Image 1 (spheres, rainbow over the protein chains, first blue to last red):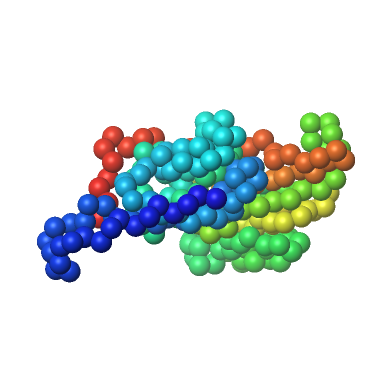
Image 2 (tube, chains in turn yellow, blue; image 1 turned 45 degrees about the vertical axis):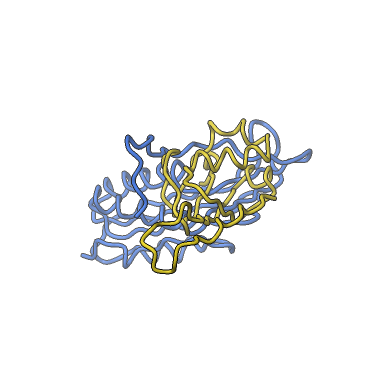
Length: 106
Length: 158
């Protein structure tokens, strides 16, 4: 299981401070299908992180915990909010990201 | 003639597909032809006897992609109605896994649209088939959907 990244410490600036926080927590839902689901043990996983991240970096994060995943990288496509997405797509809080093995419907 | 999807059917189901009802749905007095595709579970795969199949889908995205195929069908071909249904879960040998029916005033458009529909579905709709054999199970070889190439400049979050 991935541990959520701790929230950034509260800013010492006041509530109405114009200074943006140094980092902002991004929370995304990650879905795995087919053999990727079996490999990671997750159908759906919620994860939080503090810094900007692309879909590629998110996949690498899971591959670090499930080394088997890495060898499927070239035969996986990603989607963001139910549209196929490029690997360098940056994630935004609330996104639903899915890692999809080759499709075999029909 | 209605030319768009309000009269079409795009569904994922877990029960047997009612082929007759779908054909009846797309059939209208102004049409002259219906072409159907009935995809069903084969009893072998690569010469190994198959016991049964199990389909899973990214359901919300699969439905969205099926509707997108419908939009393309109406743009590209002079057709009337489309019914496109994929079944999920466990299927026995001979069970229909996917059924597509396209009606049109003339047969050529119906043939072309039905062919385009099944070919595109197999390439782009997030559905996966697991094949069960006497000695185990495997995920079927599939096709990798075309995904957008890396963006030249990442879009800023807004």
